Each structure stands twice: as C-alpha cells, then as structure tokens.
Image 1 (cartoon, rainbow, N blue to C red):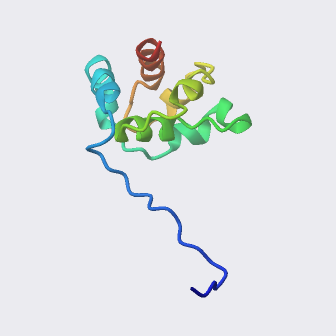
Image 2: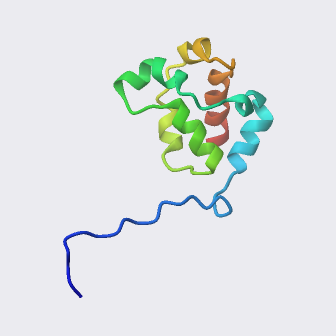
Length: 107
C-alpha cells in the first residue's frame, strides 16, 4: 500500500437513534419555550461568561436536542444568571429557566 501522506477522518454523522434524548424531553416538559428556540446564537453573542470562557448556551441547547450529553454538566455551571441572553432573545425563550432546570435534572 502506498502512503500519500494523508488519512481519512472519522465519520461524524449523528445517529439520533443511539443518543439518549430523555433529558431534552424532561426539559421540554418543564420549560416549553425551549421548543421555540431557533438556535440563532443571539444569546451566546451577548453572554458575559461566553466572552471569557467557552460557554455557549446555543451549543448547549443544540447538544441536548441532539442527545449529546458530553460536557453539558460542566458547561451549564459556568452560567452567571445575569439574564442578558433572555433580554436579547428574539423568540423570548426563558433561557435562565432552561439553565436552572438543566442543573436540577443533571444533579
């Protein structure tokens, strides 16, 4: 076999059937406004914590919706509950309550 100096990357497809979406379903029942989130990123762009760390509320919501729970428990604890994300959300998603519910679910 000839080595041309490159390799194939691992497949990055998301198999939703293999992911556990139970956390999203619990979150959905306790905070229904998570369903109207369009993942626009406005919350993440105004986040005070996000300016100094890798915290992204948009990415947390996307990952929970997909059922990918890696590092979620660590990330949600970075939130300072300042409320900027809730003020700028174009869909009026109750982002502070989403974080609060996630903290209680994952403990």
